[in-house]
Length: 386
Picture (cartoon, rainbow, N blue to C red):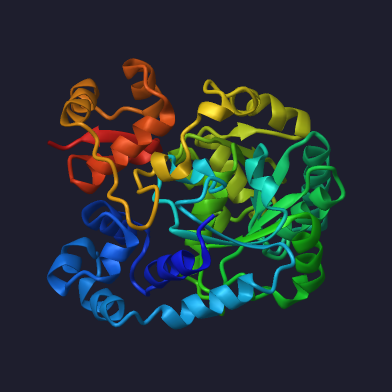
């Protein structure tokens, strides 16, 4: 965990508007440390920023210092409040696999749930009573089986899954599309209190971020990445839940759907997922069977915990804010590019081919992608470009 002053400087960069995960990763890669970023010139910063015309003046003027101050004040209230950065060992590794990890996570509740096996349950906000009952039952039974239930804290299926999981022994994580200090929808106030005590609320957005439509697809990618699999219970054909399911599939996670009546338009999205290859599930036993391999791998990792990479190494970041990140050897990069050839390949297959641990491989893949040598493709695959 960073010291207060270090965390403040980190947040000043990470919370700068228009400096998203991609630009943040590029800044760290090219400039080497938070201190170097804060003291860099416009010419040094500009090549690292996706939206340089908007982000550059804000970063140079340290505009996000006010947001950092608010974040520090929120953290210092205590009460199971946490802020995780990419330099923290508790940062969830699953967010680095096939996607850009958010530079900062705000958390309220039981942070230990991040290290538990997780399955996502998502679905319609305007769910039928039967679907709500299914979501609540699935949430409770998964929690009783030692699985943490992840969902999006929305009305309908999400809220029911959270409520059910709170009744079990392993609780639930709610991924927010707002700031951690905003309860949306407002009717979930009691649920938010309960989850901040025995579950966990999580947000990548700065404090005071109000509900904005564009933020919810960003939230959905975190739901998909955190879960070993995603279960969709009742979703219309054009639904945000289908975005979560698609993202889960692209990340190599299991995708499952609960069938419904052909007369119910709220089930059309689930039926489409099943037609496209999602597993049809009607019980928690089905879910556990579908996710059996992923659950076994999670509970029995190839690398002993004491020898696993910390997130700062897995993301190819410096050990401290002043350090320069260790560069991967060119021969290692060339070895990976040669092994990839020019056909799309999944990271799991590439890791097996090279006899590399996944954390080591993703660090180099991120490095290569930032350099424009490779690109991600559908299904969580990577393809060589040069």
